Image (cartoon, rainbow, N blue to C red; front, top):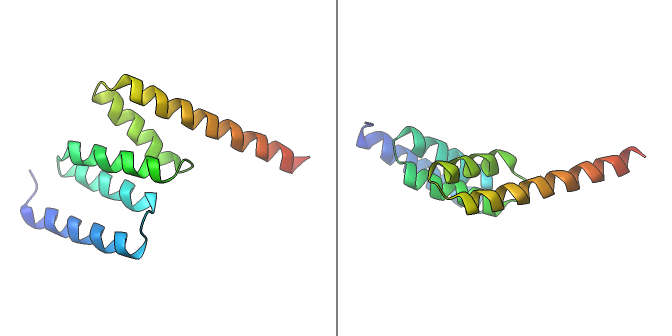
Length: 101
């Protein structure tokens, strides 16, 4: 398991990044990845969900949140996030088609 020093450094970096860019899903997502590597899966899952909620269009966070929900056997929540992500992708595809016309 990681040393407490690395956990403290990760927390300090996350707090600094959050102050610089509040509500940025990339900050939540990056911190979730760090927490996962620090064997803090429950905390990581919470930050992935926060990242997915902050931005419907930040797909790396939504994909990871769906994966974590499935791992946690929270299938209904995973299906809801997946459905929303698919809807968002469809909206983007339709917008791209309009722009190409």
